[in-house]
Each structure stands twice: as C-alpha cells, then as structure tokens.
Amino acid sequence: MSLRLRLTLVAAIVVAVVLSAASMATYFLMHRELYKQVDSTLTQDAAQQVDHPHVGFHDFGPYANDYVALVTSTGTALNYPFPVTPAVKEAAKGTRNRFFFVDTTVESQPVRAIVVPINGGGAVVVFQTMQDVIHELNRLRLILLLVSIGGVGAAALAGALVSRATLAPVRRLTGAAERIAQTGDPSERVPVGGRGELARLGTAFNTMLEALEESIETQRRFVADASHELRTPLTSLQTNIDVLKQQEKLDPAARNRLFADLQRESSEMRNLIAGLLELARGGDTRAARETVQLDELVDGALDRARSRFPHIAFEARLEPTEVEGVPERLDRAVWNLLENAGKWSDPGSTVEVTLEHGELRVRDHGPGIAAEDRPHVFERFYRAAAARSLPGSGLGLSIVHDVAEAHGGSVSAEEAPGGGALLRLRLRSS
Image (cartoon, rainbow, N blue to C red):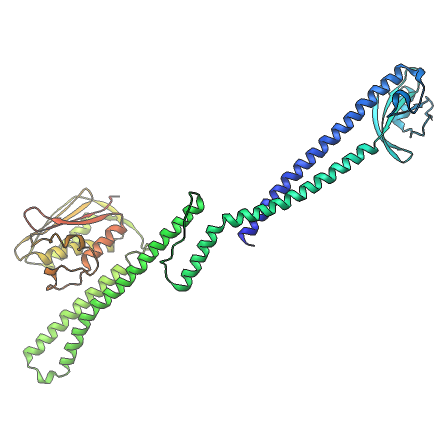
C-alpha cells in the first residue's frame, strides 16, 4: 500500500470516527429533547386532568394533542383500549403512589403515556402518539447518515489531494534517487522550497548528493593518481628487468647497479602500495578503538627513527598522554612525521620532538616548507618541487592528515622560528 493511499485512508477514518461520534451525540441529544418536551406536555395535562375530573375523559377540547384514559381500581381501561400492565394495575390499586412514564402501542400506534394514581383508587393515563416524533428522529438519522457519508467522501478526496501535494517533494526525491541509481551520476539536485520537514529532507538529500559526488570525484582522482604514481616505478622495474635479460653483456659493476636499482624501486613500490592501502582504509570505522598511551607510542617510533636515520639526533620531551584511537594508525601517523623530518634534515642536525597538552610537535632544521607549498603538503601525491629528486610517493603527510581527522584531531605545517619546518599533530586526550 502506497504512502499516499495510507494517508488518504487515515484522513477518511479519522473523519468517519469524528462524524460518527458527532452524529450519535446529535441524535441522542435530539431524542432526549423531543421526549423531554412530550413528557413535559403529558405531565401538565395529566395534572390538570387530575385536578379537574369534571372535564371527563374526552379526546379533544383542552387536550387536543393528548388522549386520556381512566383505569379503574380493578384494572379496567375506560375510553381507550390502553394496555394495562402490572405497573399500571399497581398504580390503579394505590400500591404505587408516584406517576411514571411508559412507552407502548395503542391500536398499532406508538404512544408515550404518563400514569398518575388517583386518590381513592384508579389512575389517569394521558398518552400521546409518537408517530411525528419517531418520523422526525428517523429523518434526522437519515440526514446524519448522509452527512457522515458525504463527510467521509470529502475527507477522502481532500486527503488524496493534500497527500498528493504534500508528497510531491518525496516523489521528486524518489525520482532523483532512481535516476541516479540508473545513470550513476550524482550531479542532479532536487528543487527545494519552503521551511518544513520536507524542505529539510530535500536539503539533506542534496547535501548527501554533494557529498556523494565529491566522494566519487575523490575516488576517481585517487585511482588516477595512484595509477600515475604506480606507472613510474613499474616502468623503471620493467626497463631494468629487460636489461637484466642481457646480463651476460654486462660487467659486474653494471649488474650490481641494476640490482641496487631494482631493490630501491621495489622498496619504493612496497612503500607506495602500503601508503595506498592506508589511505584506502582511512574511512573505515570498523577498527576497534582503545586507550592509547601516546607518549609510549611516540617513544617507540623515535627508536625506529634513530635506527633509520643514525646521523640525525632526535631529541624528545614527552608528557604522559592518553588518547582514544586505533594504535596502528596512530603509530603510522607519528612515524610519517618523524620520517618526513629525518628525510629533510642534514646529517648532524637535530629533530626536536615535543608531546604536551595532547599536541605532538616535530621540528626539523632543514630547508623548511615554501609558502606556496604549505597549503598543499597534506594533499595526496603532492610533492614540492624540492622533493621530486628525493625518494617517496607524496602520501606520507596525506596519511597523517587522514589519521588526524579520523581521530577528531588536526595537523598543520608552519615555518619554524630560525628556519626549518614545524608540524603539529593535535589529538583529543581521553
């Protein structure tokens, strides 16, 4: 069942319930009022009849709308064949002193009567035909029934029209989603107007499409850049392999140079693939987070850095710091910062590492980062002009940026006082 049909049925059912309740209340109120008027008239006429018995038991005269019958103490009805029930007999015998009303039939006509005991025996019965009252009530019931049916029909029609107009934005969203699913192109946008919930839904849908489009474009760029970066070492490897096929023509020194090139290129390929895999799983939220002692993690990375760059001094001042995160990814980010500093530092220079207040600062004394390169150093595959002669893929700082964002932190690069680069990795302490 469609949402539009459900809304229409809900509107019709609600109106039907309301109209039914209102119709029943109207009918019973009118029923009560008409019977109350009849009872009032019967009560007045019965009182006059009891107070003036000399008027006699006539059909018309002062009681043009009423009929009067006398029930003797023996239970016999005079004037009219009024049915004498046990309750009427009790009133006529004097065992029931209060008047009461009764609904019955006289000569196949529905009547309402008041029975009033007479002092000394007998009872006066004043009754009135209810044909007109019943006719009016039947007429009212028919009118209320027709009004209810018409109201339900109008409510169903109005519900259909309102639901059609209200769900128009939803139909547009559905159509856009179906077209995007068919074409795979998320550039389409849904017109948004107003300030209601559906307008917010349209805005959210467009925002989602923008994010999807950006994600697809990022993925395309990533694949294109990765293909480009992989092509260079693969081409070099293929060239060296082709040369090695003719190794009998090479002298030992040339072969050794080729093997060294192959080892270097395979190492670069391994590092590039590792970086690509790290970036590819950067948005994976399934990795379990835990409390990480960041100062201990940095200390372990410093040991590796001192082994990797033995001619560079790594000075550290680490404050005990706990963060919530994925240890492997945090370790990769810290290592990339230290490796970047070591790569740009001259032999005999110093790299200063400071961890305090949840911020890791890595400062080298190399050439620093040019102002025009600073906004781009965290982009994937970006390599400054000065770095193109050095080994690397341009993914190291990009990985640091992704890890920082995934952990609710940030990373920045700036010129250090006195020269060199200063990189700051900020993480939220646990």
